[in-house]
Image 1 (cartoon, rainbow, N blue to C red):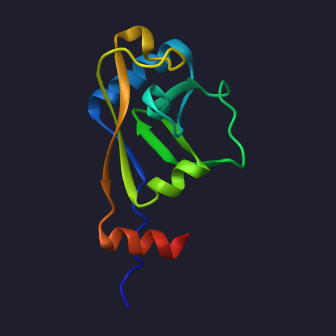
Image 2 (cartoon, rainbow, N blue to C red; image 1 turned 135 degrees about the horizontal axis):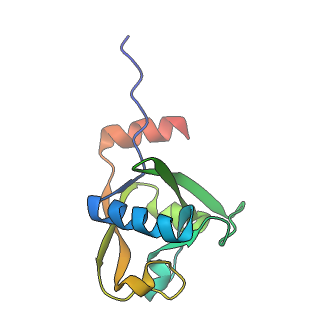
Image 3 (tube, rainbow, N blue to C red; image 1 turned 90 degrees about the vertical axis):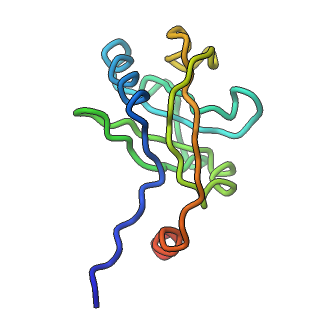
Length: 130
């Protein structure tokens, strides 16, 4: 028998988004993301200083983004996760004004989610471990 397949990451970050996170961390300290359902900016990934948004049983920890020498945890509302659990999410950044509560708002950019469905092989590994 071969080695068990490693668990696919549920979240990733683009280079430009990682660079922005490094700048934001220097200004705001440790960071976190929360992705909730909703319309408009309510469906955008929101970046907060850690501790400014409290997570609990209604949230799922999707994973941690590795940025330089630190990590940024990514959370999603449990109800939203039921819709997105078959999807790999990549946090990116684009020009534009995001939500007022997300720390990147004054920068003239906003975080967004790019997604793709997990492959059959990835989903098989994930489903077996949940």
